[in-house]
Image 1: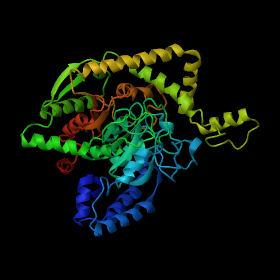
Image 2 (image 1 turned 90 degrees about the vertical axis):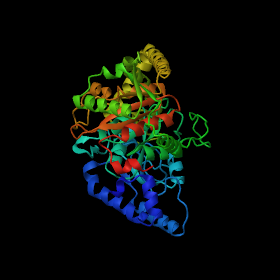
Image 3 (image 1 turned 180 degrees about the horizontal axis):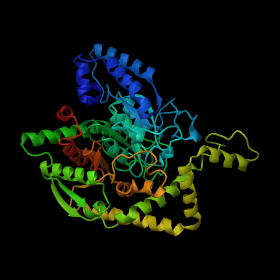
Image 4 (image 1 turned 135 degrees about the vertical axis):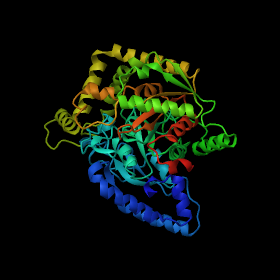
Length: 497
C-alpha cells in the first residue's frame, strides 16, 4: 500500500514496529509534493526543512521507546487564512502577501501539541470568497483526479493536498460549504463541525457568525481522531466557543463498530436518515444523481432506515446567506486599509488616497464585488438584512422539526462534478449556485460532512450528511457507513481503526 494513503493508526503501528521511519515517511511525502505540486498547485508555502528535522526527532523519540501522541506521525496542511506562527498568512490576497503570523491559531496549536507536523499553508480563494480558487491572487489549484479540472473552493488547496496524498489531513474553513464542496469535487471527506465546537481563534474571518474551522481527510477514522484533538480547548480565548465536556470521537466510533460487530448487527442499525425533497429538486448532473442513489443504497445496506421529509425554507437559504455574509465581510475587512493593517500603496497624496489605493490594489475583483454589495445592503437595503435573519431562524426551525423524525439527513453536496477553469468563474450567479446545497447547514450552525459516494466517470461525487447540534458521533458513524462501501476508497484503509 502507498504509505501516503495509510491511516494515522496504521502509520503509528508501522513506526512503533520499526517497519518504517518517520524521516523516511516524511521524505516520501515531500518527494511526492515535488513531483506533483507544479501540476496541482495546492500550496502557498512549504516547510520542507522543518518537516525533515521533526521527522528525525520523532525517530529518536521512538528509539527510546516513548509513547506516541494522538497525531504523531501524521503530516497535515493548513488553509492560508489560519495562523501558523512565523509563516505567512496571506488569505491568498495581495493585501496580506507579506503578513507573518505572530502566533498559532488555537486549532493549529492543539494539533501540534498532539504531535501533528505541518507541511505548510494551502491555496484558497481570496479571504475565502469563492468556490474554485480562481479568485486566489497567486495561483489556481487543480484537481488531483484530473489536472484539467478544478479542486473547488474556497478550501481547494486543502482538498487537493489530501486527495493527492500530501499528508494525512488538512485544516480548512467552511462558511457556506468551503470544506464540503471541494471535498466532494476532489473525492475526499470534509467536515464542518457544529458552530462553536472548534475554536476560531487565529482564523482571519470572512463572516464570523458562520465561519468554522474543520477537517479534510481520506477516511472517517482520521477525521474522528483530528476532531477530538481540535475541539475546544477549554482554555480558548474564542468568545464563540461553546464550553462542553470533550468527546473522544475516535474511541466513540471504535466502540460503536465493536458493539455492532459483537452483536453481528449492521453498522447503521437503528439510525433513521431523512431525505429532504427540496435538496433533490435542484437539477443534478446525471453522474451525481447516479452516485447519490448508490450512496442511499449503501446506507440501507448498513441497516439505516430512510424516510422522506421536508425543509420548506431551503430555497430561500442561498439568498439569505449572501446578504448576511456580505454585510459581515464589510465589517471584517474594514481594517485592511493600508494604514493600520494590510499592504500600503507606494504612492498617495492624502489619508483618503492611501485607503482608496491600498484597498483598490490589495483586493481582487470578487472581494470588491462582495464589499460593494454589502455596503449597498447596509445603506439602502436594511430590510433585506432583516428578512435574511428571519429566513435563518425559519431554517433552524425546519431542521429541528426534521430532527424530530430523523437522526441524520442525506443530501447531495454539489449538483455538479469537477469542472474546468473559467466555466463558472465568469458568472457570479453560477459561482453562487455551487454553494446552494451546503449553505443551509451553515446558516443553521449544524454539523455536516461530505463523503465520497461514487466515481461514475472517474470524477468523484460527494454525498452530504447533516447532523443535529453537537451530534458529531452519529455524523461520523454515518460517514463511515458510506465510506466502507464506496468505490473511491481503498479497502485496506477501511478495515483499520
